[in-house]
Image (cartoon, rainbow, N blue to C red):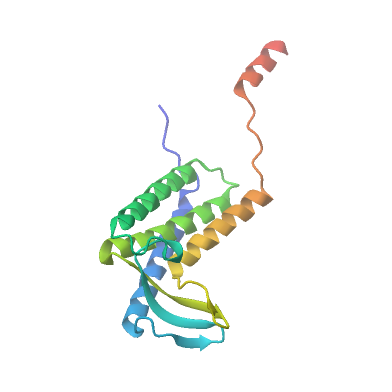
Length: 175
């Protein structure tokens, strides 16, 4: 009987911290900002409350509502897959587990918004001159950081091919 592995699940506490920070920051934004009215913070950065019914960059924002269930389903499935993967990770895969925790926390932070208010709250507005990056939030930031950390860790620690068990058995028979 196979016993349950904990692997790198200890890093999931980061997901809960991210969810808490995300929801707190959105609460503060909703209660202190007027929708679509930028509040300058420093050159190139505004606080601006905005809402998004779609995905990144307002993809499918006006699709009629079905997209929210699809995005929530994707986020839920990806989170479950990442949690399962974290359970199988080895001790030395710490940064990979942290990357997964960042992605899970960000994904669930946005799922909470979609479930409660049928839209995601955004409030960070970066710009250069007249060119604005799409408004985003803390959850989006951690999804990005997690993906970047994942890519960086994969680049720094490329996976070594697993030894084939058949070859091991054949080697034992020969030797």
